[in-house]
Length: 243
Image (spheres, rainbow, N blue to C red):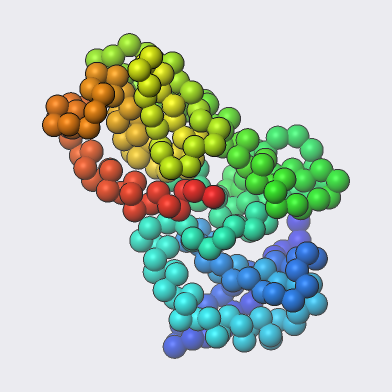
């Protein structure tokens, strides 16, 4: 693997190093993203000179500094994903780097600090890469989420329910129907385990209490005394998990 192209600028006495990814799909525009796992990534057309990229990063230095501060507090950047090598992805609260393997086939695999996604035929089509990522996360969710249900259901005092990993549920982390089936959003598998467990307990308690009244929250609190902090953390991080 070739060493990644890099550069750096100095702003207000602070050095801001950044990685450069050249894209044949880009003709004129340059994208700058920030994430806490890998710092600053610049995606640029193949023929744009590095000194021009330095100038672009320098012009955006104040914005970059704000994004770094915000990312350190809340998690990955809200900048639109391009699904290209070098981007950061989350799995159970840990940051990994995306590596699009052009010409490779098979399933996505986590190796070391990299999540490798195959791109058959050398294609780096963003829609295809996203689909492969979603499939990988759904497989992980289908493995790990029932394990967490099993780990908590005895504490809640309910039998093991039927668990479904929702295919395309964006606005809710979980739900529980009148038949006792719990549906969980695959996206929650990106969050730290303590937040995964909050969603699991939230739905398990619904097997005993249908609404969100006082009895419901008291039951949640008996099982998970710090649920309010977990709920607040999920609200702060939640928007970073939807893509």
